[in-house]
Amino acid sequence: MSTKEDMSHGERVRAAIDLKEPDRVPAFCTLSWAVNLAGNNLNCIGKKEKDVSMPQFLNTPEIQAEAHFKATELFDADFVWCYSSNQPVAVAIGCEAIQPYWSTTAISRTAIDKVEDWKNLEFPDIEKDPTISKQLDIIRLVEKGLHEKRGNDTFIDGLTNGPFTIAGLVLGIEKLMFAMVDSPDDTKDFIDFCTDVSIECAKAQLDAGADQIFCPDPSASGDLIPPDFYREFALPYAQKYCKAIVGHKDRYSCMYHICGDTADRLEDLASIGVSFLSLDYKVSMKEAKERIGDKVCLCGNVNPAETLFLGTPEKIEEEGRQCIRDAALGGGYIYWSGCDLPIDCSLKNVKAFMEVPIKYGKYPII
Image (cartoon, rainbow, N blue to C red; front, side):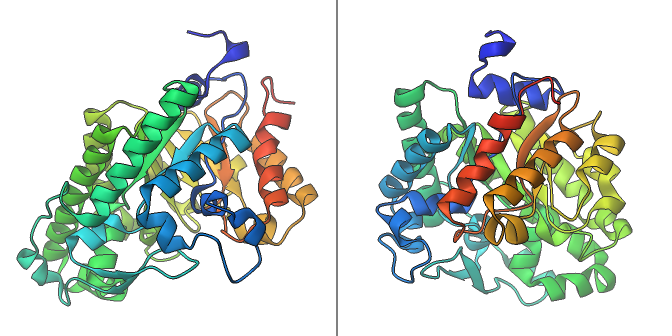
């Protein structure tokens, strides 16, 4: 084990998850923004035409892996995120999706029209599903390449959405809202099915070389459902998912992100059992630290649009430093934005963002 003064990326991340103070605050990765490091895309920021389109990036493991290698070198990254779609489980279950030229995957058709139709869904063959198998190929390439370049150190993240969010994609979010009221038992059985598929997808990624699974659950946000609905229809399945992932790998293997204002359910989120909890910019990191910082490692939460995309490097530095001051004292904190980085952020803004924990995150925090 290295001393606190010269921790590796992996040691730094594990210390934060263990609610300890590492050498400095670790930083989560740039997520979808990494597409800008594919080919000559850095010189195409702000232009309509790209050297490598998003579909090329998602569907060509070699291109994506090379972009991730650039990211780890450019930002000295603690994490890297691999994905062939941001909706892999919903697509595997039967949804149709489109991949825009310069945006992330979007569901174009749900898999079912009524909640009770979930009984007709087939459990997908995870290894043979074209989207997920491509994701596994990307993870294998990145794991092999990073092992050769840096040792087995940088945390590699795969992806599955949270169970409640997957159910909203497979059925349609509006129909899911009505189903919770009109057919609660069928709805719970349906969400449980989505949970089981998501678990198997996550396990396959961990077996392929991922260290951790990034699990965003945006439809379980306080902006969409009240706390009592969250506790009944989302929380038990998030807990089941997390328990399975951690049991399959280790206590560092499950990262959970939830969008929107979740101040009304922070204690519920802390009870899921995740490795660390990522919070949207709408949540006060200071309040979250005071309420649940002794229970779970927190992550976040610079404003992605107003600050990272539209702001200046100075504004990014100021807001990022405040996040560290609010949540890093005593350890148990990972620096990040409030959600995925907008892919059209300028390189200077992303550099400023990633430099904040290096500049201000060395312990002891001042």
